[in-house]
Length: 280
Length: 280
Image (cartoon, rainbow over all chains, first blue to last red; front, side, top):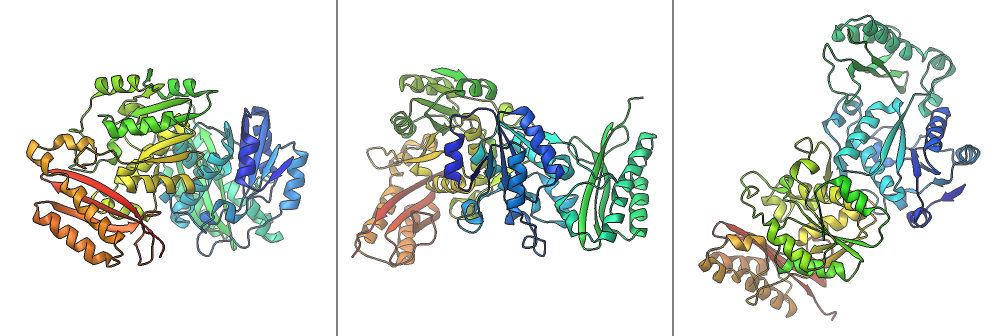
């Protein structure tokens, strides 16, 4: 595995190479990331993984400085997984002037769900992903469904800006008790970690009700939110949406997704579950 | 010359080809465009010219519908000039949903100079240029200095978004009497056409004063604006800026540019002249 720090060296490596798959990450790799890498390896000759903690997508008061940086351990995992290139630029390589003058402004979906609580976050994500796409020039790129809103916004960006990249969505990796794998799980105390699967159970409950044919979306959302609140969570949102584009779900929609973001103590966790209802 | 209407066919043509130069246009080609094409041909094996009147960069009340569409005559000129591909997508090919969800948001320079009078214009320009870049995937792209603010914004976009395209600026083409070549010159009456070089003469006068060492920029701007106004022009702006980034010029700056936009009757014309002052 080559470790590449500069855009120039990455471009030189890329030249003349075919079939490159790309997995952008912020490092602190867990099994969820490894599933992305496996999906990438299955689809291309060469896999590039980037590790870059992107200042642009962290809001004020968020955990940019505290975000776990574990390059040595990550590097060993990637080597063992048969990755071709680890692209690990520093801040100055991607933001030589300290920030960006020019941004990608995603669709208005950026201002909903997580976007309400993290203003500017998806703009920062879309901008850095486009930069990385332009540097790596991948044929395909793998994104986890855990960040489902991010995945949707990236898909819309690819379509709207005519990027020649195939986006491959990869299922959420979960611990045995159902908790979605996330770097931020490392912030949880032992006691919080034990209670954390309540979030998954709450959205699973909503999925079961949907599968039984309930179309009272607002009631389901309210009840599940109350259940979590009673268990001590601070819920940012718990919503039923259309999985295709994350627009408001209407009775009759068959492809739905239940998404939630909530605080367990000081740690903000997100999770979601897709559900496809049978045609009746 | 191949005439290509779809993204799919353009991508198929592009595959495996090296050294592609690109000239994006809105058609109605004049000698200014032909100079861009000449510059492109000198630098690459294959030249792609696009003709697309981009709805996104026209404001309300602007001349989108009236904009001259002369595809047959343009096509003959391009053929004669040895262009490889004319890419002429229709509206639906580039905006299949009627518009864009996701945009490129250029630097704050988009809100100055022409941006004050054409809100959203440079966002529309940057977005379509990025789309076209992603479709054509050129190695180099030629832009005229006549739209100097556009050139600067595209350069910043390329740098900020890490696009792998070399931007080649091409000098303004002028009629014998100094008038900058522009599709919009076609809107002028015979009498207006005769007076139109007054704009070029006004900015030339400012350049001469700068070359003599004057650093009273505001006075120069005011005097030239008054001269034009007295001649019957409605001046949007006439400003001295730094040519490198179009930021405010300060005494001591050596690389300057005088830019102006003004109405001759109902026709809005723009022009500019760069000046490099000797170090003293």
